[in-house]
Image (cartoon, rainbow, N blue to C red; front, side):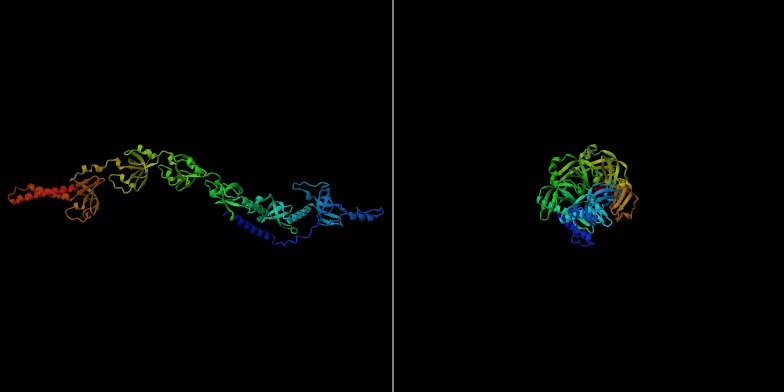
Length: 628
């Protein structure tokens, strides 16, 4: 995954180089067989012509003969030839140079003026010049020092190219497809030949001096193509061979960051690339390698594994230091307090960095004794330093459980002492649900009044029928469950239970009146007072067979019945209308028996006796039903 990319990269670069070079010379003709032979750059200043030095004068030569001898002693020149001359005059526009001809050669003063406007030439200066114009008839000689220099450079280029050498140059500016390089002449450096890899910021190379290899040159077309990549590849290959010999597992080496990705860093170890995976950079948390390093940084790494055949090198940096988890048990014993920085938040908790490579988790359930924390952002923020208590430590699994709430006293431990069972408290309704009311007490502790503990007598379908959020109410402490952190309250317990005295107010056998509140198939419910109801069973409505009470009564009707039985525990009162009718019959028989005259016959006595027995039987039957 790592070092093989170097070979692919090289292949891509080589392909790009070929394409670039082909495009460079697509419009050019093939180089001639290294041009025509060059003339030698200069002649000797003093000609060994025997016409002067070797001529023997007799003293009898005529003037014409002497002039011929003089002319023959003068140098012969050709245009394009490079010779050495001496400055004999520096004028405003021209510099006169003696090159050994009867007429002095002239060079434009502009060739000697630098960027600051200074003239850099003086009398008796000697330097090489090129014959630009040679007119023997007019005796005119025009010279150029700059062109002489270029001729020398071309000669040097040929020698370097033939010797497979290198030349030094300065990258002057960017041009289309690459760079312009000053090597004494302007040369072209293709972008693909500037480095081993594509250059992101090409401007960084401008005005820098490098060594180059001459790929091609054409003097006629004034064309020179350079390469820096060829030299770098050769240098890298030397380093590569040496590095491959030196690499071994567990060896510590220095390298240069070559490339950075989201999963790690590619490191140049010297012609061989290794991958430093993001998980092996640090014992701590690393979001992206670019947060720690930049391309070009020098780093020290450890060889974790090396595949010589595939040339794959896995590197590690955290392995240079001891694993902090090996000493975590001693540093962070259970129950100790620590201070750490919040590095990450999740739905279930916050991760706290205790030191580089050691993180603990504060679960949302361990953040507050009393508040229901839905997300850790309600308590902490990333980057914040927090104090916590070590709850559990498992170094083998690299886990530390922490708690924030344990740094404070648990209010549930003292709440039972502050509010013992039976205490009447006062608080505001903070929330209403279908099953009860939540009352704010203190220290973020809420008590619950269950719907069944709101009233002794009222049938409440929803607490909002009686109370609204924000109401201040009084309630009695019914129970405190510290283990489950539950605080139970009751409102109805602030008053006595009316059912405790109902038997005194409604004695068995007493005749009472009430309003029908509900009709069912099995009987009639009658409200005796607010919240106290009695039931007249269908069998106790009449002596006649009644299929449904709805056929005889309506809700809201007032009826009179007799109290048959009372069960305060089950909150039930049994009533009977039929018993009132029976009582009326018994009173009629008793009245009839009392008003009978003394019997004048045995039949009259028997009748009186039967009536009395019937009355006693009815009373016994009624008493039995009441006992039931």
